[in-house]
Length: 174
Ligand code: FEO
Image 1 (spheres, rainbow, N blue to C red):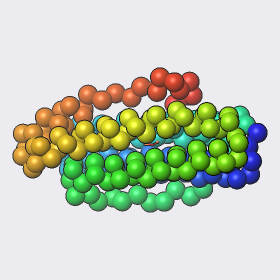
Image 2: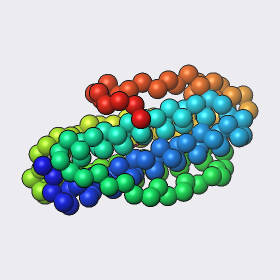
Image 3: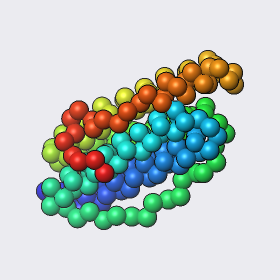
């Protein structure tokens, strides 16, 4: 069972994850618009992953007898300053998500809610991977600078990313 406070905080995280999906959907659209189809693919895969994150929490609230309360989704930015700018914004956003997950863990510990604490550990680990992926791509983008060939190579690499349900997730895809 969930306390009111814990349920409210988890509902806020559902919103954070759906906003993340929306943000990456917007970056995918922008990537297509500027001719970077590989980046568009990468962000669309990211959009799907974020919906899985949202649904994991959605299902958990339901499983624990809490009430899911959906909130408005804020409008994401629609204009970006190119590939590096999108990934720097992605990393900044993921750092915000990491902080929100850490705050949830702190609340679960405070409330002596062991089930929610265990549930959240998957997200703690996931955030390490998310930030590492972004850092790696940012490093590559900085290396090639504005050089067209390098950007084309990275675009090709990002085109190969495929969506797979996270290994520990048995939730259905949104
Ligand atoms: Fe669901 Fe990218 O954090």
